[in-house]
Image 1 (cartoon, one colour):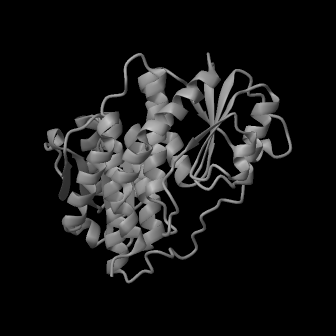
Image 2 (image 1 turned 135 degrees about the horizontal axis):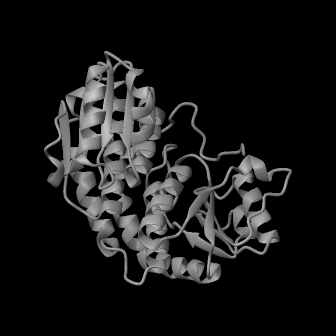
Length: 339
C-alpha cells in the first residue's frame, strides 16, 4: 500500500505549477513592500529554517541581498534592533509563537513584514504586511515534503522579483520536479546508503548546504537513522574524523563545491572508514566515490531542490527497509512551539 508520504512526494511538481502565477504576484508585492532594504531578517524553524538557509545563499548570490537568520529566543523578552531590515517569516503551519515575536518586533520598529505559510488564516498572518501562500494543501504525512518544495519555490520567486532578469529555470520547476521524483522512485537505493548502520553524514556548500540540512532531517525523521549535516568547510575542520566503519557520507555537489574541495571530503571520509556516495549533475562525474547518483544538469538553485527530492525518496526507502511507520514519524510534531 502506498504511503501518504510517497503520495505527497509525487504531488510536488503539480503543486508548484498550480501556485506559480499567484505565488509570483505575492512575491512581487513582498519585494515592493520591503522597498530599498539594508538586509533581510528571516525567522524560521525546522525544515523552514533549511529553506531560510537556501534563501540566504540564493538571494545573496543572485540579487546581492544580505540575509540574516534570526534567533527567535532573543525576541521573547527584549528588544533587538532591526532597523532597515525587511522581515520575513517562513512557517509552514503559521503557528510558531517564537516566529511571531520576531515579526511583531520588526513591525513595531517600522519594518515591512512578510510571511510565507501554508495556512493564510494562521495567527502569524495577523502581524504580516504581505502573505505568500504556499497553497500546497493539507499535508497528511508528518514529515513535510510539498510544503518544503513550495517554500523553496516561493523564495526563488522572491529572489527572481528582486532581479533585473528572471531567475533561470523558474518557469519549468514543476516539470523538473516531476521528472526527478519519478526517476528517484524507480531507482534502487545505492548500496552504501542502503547498508548504513551507525550513521549518515550529509555534506554540502552554499545552496547544497541547505539541501544537505533538509536531506539529513528527512532521513532522521522518517527512517530513524542517526543523520547529521555539515557545510564542507565545517566538516573538513574536524568532524570528518568522527565516524568510522558502518557510517556513510552523502556529498551533495552543487556549483559551490569545487572538484578539489569534493576530493578532500571524499578522501578524508574514506580514510576515516566511511563509505561514500556523491549526488550531483552529469557534468560532475569525475569525482571518485563508492556510489554516484547522477542527475540532469540544471540551474544551481534548481539542482539543490532536485537533490532534496532524492533525500525525500531516500528517507522513504530506508524507512520501509527498517519497518518504520512512515506517515507518523515517531516524535515528530508539525508545529514548532518553542522559540
